[in-house]
Image (cartoon, rainbow over all chains, first blue to last red; front, top):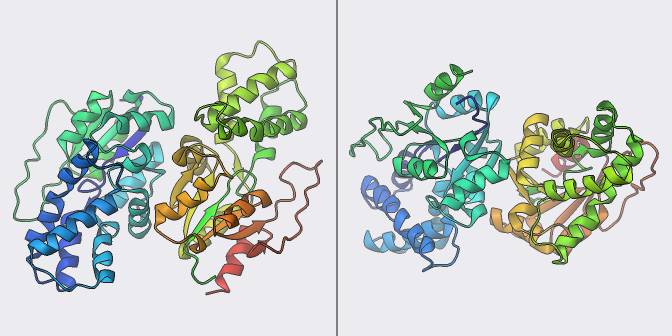
Length: 233
Length: 233
């Protein structure tokens, strides 16, 4: 553990609260839909959309565009019509305006004092930059699928982080609230830290956040992660 | 000018003082060479090395590797032998440790309040991240040749910045101390700001910093640039 130099963070769900941010905005703009159902449906479209890129069915397509494809379908499914193009574009960019979890900014500032902290997200560069600027997320570097032209959990993404910083895979700690992401990172030789985010899918969905022994660390939030890592000093 | 949303910065020479930083370190480690001549020769190798990539003679090669190729040649040319591999590697990474000009950090913090500020440098991601962390350069996003797989002044780099942030080319202001860079940016539709850095090549080399009327702005340093841009509010 003392060899860790770089912390690579999953973003959606791990650092920011996509469910709360999207559902609040859907409600606020007065879209005539159930915000909970609409938000969960939007997010459910995410993995299949990326899978179309990963499988080669679609050429490289960044997440803003995938989000828009899913949104266009959803508006039909939920019977929303007549929304002006400008409003649809603004709504699609709600993913640039996601709010951090209450511990995220404080935790990242502490972790940044000792480690290089970067994103490793399926979000695109513009999305992640706008989000970081608005939410004061102090990344040392924004790395993402758009740079590596592969979506997680493709190994090219994890190995790309190690290559960028010229470190060994075991010198990178992947931090995520999703076991699939951590498992793929371990497959590339990374250390892994799980973060509990029991409310990731909103108050009506149970999420199993119990520890998995394969992870190097298990943390309740990013401040807890900073506490645990400082004890390894 | 009121439409500017993104400021893209050249880094070597514009934001950081490569001559002073490299020559001081060459002197400090006691390399038996003239620090001034050695530093200038290292930098003189930069454009031809990138040209080998731009022409297709070399496949994509990041700047750390090009710097090392030039350094290996230079050590021979300057008659330096027997330097351990670890010391050569450390010396090569002096480009990660360049110091900002005295106005850079203050200027960038002011500009960041109103604009998205990013790098557009021929340096690689790891180099620019390490530099920013050490020198407290508050980039919203690090963009560079390594992301676009093209070196400046190839148009793919400038157009890549506009694409990342989903803005029009005329909504980006390229900031640089080099007219060639600004000219290429203008060719892609960018606005341009020149920054005077009369000491870029050290105290023994004259640099003509006189205004060129094609530029949108001419500034003495980054604080002056922030002053000028705030008057456009």
